[in-house]
Structure formats: C-alpha cells, structure tokens
Amino acid sequence: MTEKDTITPKQRRAVEALVSTGSRREACRAAGIAPRTLYRWLKQSAFCEALGKAQEQALADLRSRLLALAGRAGDVLEASMRADDARLRLRAADTVLSRLLQVYEAVELTQRVEKLERIVEALEVRHEG
Image (cartoon, rainbow, N blue to C red; front, side):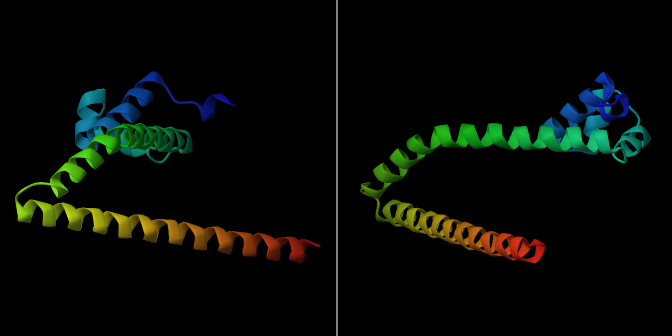
C-alpha cells in the first residue's frame, strides 16, 4: 500500500462523521473541515474506499444489533397475536404475513441471482477455453 492509498487522521474523522451524521454539512462541522475540502476528498479513491468500508461496517453493526433484537420482536408479535383486542391481533397477523412474504421474496431473489451467477461463470469458462 502506497502513501497515496492511505488517509490522514483528519480524513478518518471526516469518514467517521459522514457515517455517524449522514449529512455532509454536519460531517464537515464535526470534523472541523470546510465543505470544499470534503468535496475534494470525495474525489480521492483512498478516501472513497475508506468511506465505503466504514459504511459497510456500520451496516454490519446495525444488522448484528437488529438480529439480536429479532427474538424479542418475535415474542412481542406472538403475544400480540394472543391479545384480547381483535385489532391488535389482526395487525400482528398482518405484520407476520407481510414480513414472511418479504423474506420469501428475498430468498427467492437470492436463489435466482446465484443461479444466474453460476450460468455466467460457466459461460465465461467455456468462452475462455
């Protein structure tokens, strides 16, 4: 890795601020930089790569937190489906069915994409050979 491939501590603060605030203006304020500096940095591949990695890590962290809460959320839905209030039961049932459909669609889409990737791979191998 060359020196041009790394970012400075100030750029690291800007990356962290961009991820935590979601706003360029707020990130500039938090990192103590001028907006034009941030825009210049956003044109640098090393900065963009560091930002992308930080965003991926933030999403992975969020995914872990949500997975940890999923069991409790399921318990709440299950209890709601046994509630005396018919509207609450109906809403809980609708939520369960809607989410089930979303999960099914996501799994099906993933399987279709994986199948297409295998086909493309096979075609590439055949074309190279």
